[in-house]
Length: 389
Image (cartoon, helix red, strand yellow):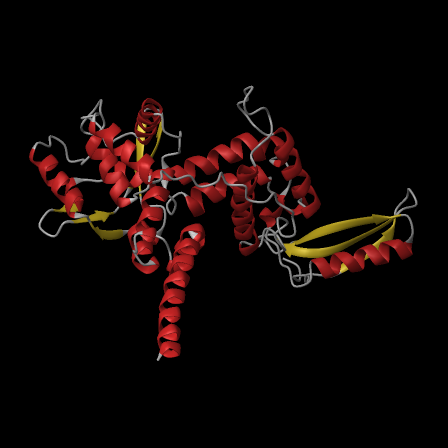
């Protein structure tokens, strides 16, 4: 084995076609042989400048011999060796679909070391305009901004790991421009609508317990579907949130961890909800608090719950809100009723109270106005009393 050449070391020569060629060492193979990056230019002066730029780009780099593997190969390796054991099944399914449907058809055959920020940006622009796999008259072919952002976040994470594994010098997703978040506005059921919703679910014996529990706890869709009786402490009136039910893939309902670490929590139930669950438990025939309607050995299918919600709302003449908006409805009425943000963030499984406040600014603003009026009236009485005295 020859002497190991240091990264950045290179050479310059004039080719037979008249062009100038330069190369620098950017890494080493497993046997110690150097890995080169080549540069071509019409003149020696131009080549010198290009080589200087390359040397700056690869300064301190020592890439491994896998740096030229295709992006599709790396993503497959990243999924199986670095990610599969540490993410929820739903997340893994989502990552796999994004790679298969978006990344591989567009840039999957590109060598890792050849990827550039400009190329990644062009990829984002392409899938934004023409990236939807399944199209219809309602959605067309344009990919949602939120999906472009999800693809970017996944690709960024994968390429960050490639940098750590000496397959890239820097992450080419850095510096790309992304569409803004354009989440659908939160919707809630106001007092009158909430009363109508409660009356509507009272008439639905099969679903009443489920939706009453949801509207009094604000659990995420997957969380309420994933509740087992072992999670319910009837003596203390508490409920432990420990898992989440996700999509059905090939007929199998995926069950995994909660969305975040703070999602693992214990909440104190309202007495009415605790009583309802206690009565339900007496007649239960499943380990699941809300079992699958077709197979009691499985948890409730979240899509089934979502579909039933839409039916109830439509029959009651209520706005066709999303399931997650029941969570917003609970949180909005809770904070408007005087529940402090710190307590509410714990119930909802938010990371911190500031996130809760940021999400329900419209409610806290109204509360601040009310507080200002109370303080104003209070001060007017004091000032008026002093002046009269």
